[in-house]
Image 1 (spheres, rainbow, N blue to C red):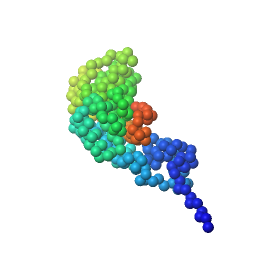
Image 2: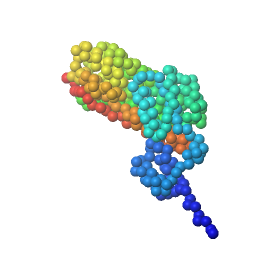
Image 3: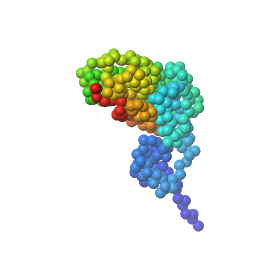
Image 4: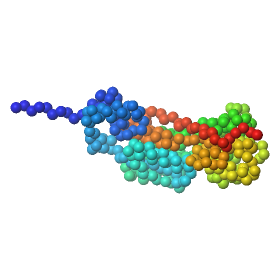
Length: 338
């Protein structure tokens, strides 16, 4: 008596064929890759259910040799930008089913970044995200030993690693063009520290916007991101100043306090615009016009770029990841000059 042949269990290629997608797309859906469109994800999941497909977790682990933990090298700071970037990466990783292991450095130099990456690779993390807002950190990130799947955040230094960042130059231009459109003859700028990439790019965007409009470019006022530097600058600016673009919202907060103490009205006497859109910005007095950075989108793109590297077996033929566009949030701190 002959035996009936046993039905073959579905494999990933069967799911791909039924869903009308590639084998790699099925793999991305099963690994919660953030770059898959919702419609495609749903089609693959329907095919998985119809075929009663059961991924072989052991085989997948052996084939990919991939842990479900991503290492993050970050700056040990409470500054809003780096802290919000870290949170955005953590949220994206959690959504994709990954945990994170963080090494926070007090000093972002070449030795510190290299040591941090080595510590993380010893933990067998799947890949590494390096949040590198300082020039020294960005240079260190792009000189890592080959073979480490890594993505750099907030760096525009040329290198082999994928880089995800907000378009800081475009954000600064939005702020300055807004103030010029209100009728201000020129815009003064309170910068961030000179060794920060974001501060440098915001200076470039401020200058580009003024030069494109044929306006005078005043001497920049150098700050240090702190409310105190904004407060001190607010007490120093002269009577000819009608508009100030602050490189971050904390400095703008200090600027508002100083102008109030001097009896100057905002925005009637001086318009103030910040950068970041901290949660408190819309509750300041007056509510602060500022440039919003989408840190959750930065996190999603960062994780997608890293998973692309891993899916490509650590080669660098992953698709490009353009800069995240900032948004101008217009509130009551900016207005036409009196």
